[in-house]
Amino acid sequence: MSKIAILALFSTIFIMGCASDSERAAAAERDVRRRVDVYGPACEQMGFKKDTDAWRFCVVTYSPTGHHH
Image (tube, rainbow, N blue to C red; front, top):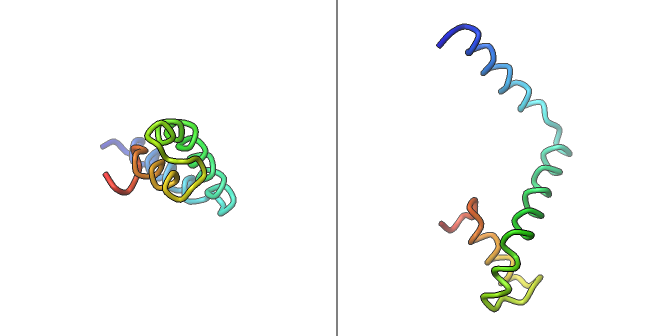
């Protein structure tokens, strides 16, 4: 790996580490909204009532980054 590529890699890692707690929280909130928008309707079609614990579990489980795959 060239010195430039290594420098670019470390620079990216450093910049990512500089994100504030509020920036990370905002990113997590955007991710949750995206999952709800994409997978919420499918969970409703499977019979889960929107905004219930079971519906939320469905959304988390069936999204690609869900923990139960």
